[in-house]
Image (cartoon, rainbow, N blue to C red; front, side, top):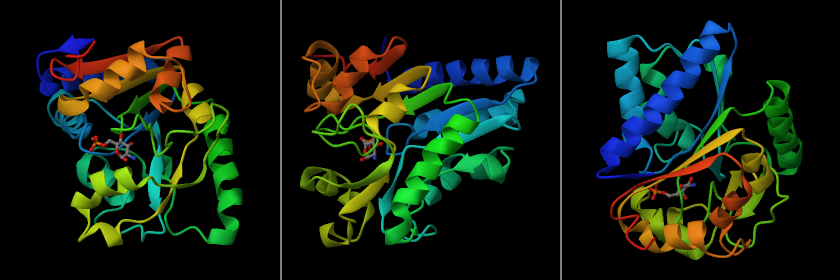
Length: 243
Ligand code: GLP
């Protein structure tokens, strides 16, 4: 779906989320959201906070699972996705902290496999993700699943591509401070979500076109979303310009 501005696209995504949360509330059920970080979803989170403050949207029945986190990185570091999520969303809504799940950059290296298995098990235990929000990296990565990630991949420790580290270095003092590793949900974890909304704005036109209209290939992780039966790309006019 193409919108004139990122703001309009974000408002559309926020309405999808709000409708789902409210529908689940009416049924007395939990709503399980998969959440993303990066600059792209900031305006979505702003809109959700507004809906909470001005229109009474409650997050009391919401359970969240974030896609990824740098590794190693202290949870409280300004650059951590834990900090990002609290700053942009969780600190401003009525979500129960026990319902928030984010891979932890402080997990002990020799126990990461166990924690990753546990992360998958926690998603399954609440019945799976109802709606997954995604951004997209310039190389087509989703979460931190870089090109070459298997369609069968699950939550795991991965190496970051240099281009990803450079793109994300704006948040760190310099490139050498950007972690070389990250923990990310896998492609199969993402594809299990019942509904997926991928958002992209601005200069991402090339990779959006390859993901939507190109071959389905592990070399362009976002192209694997073509195999999902309820995935919508929410883009602004500039990001849609090569479709
Ligand atoms: C990071 C995140 C991704 C995100 C991507 C794009 O690497 N791990 O989840 O989609 O960057 O970031 P941005 O939205 O800032 O362009």
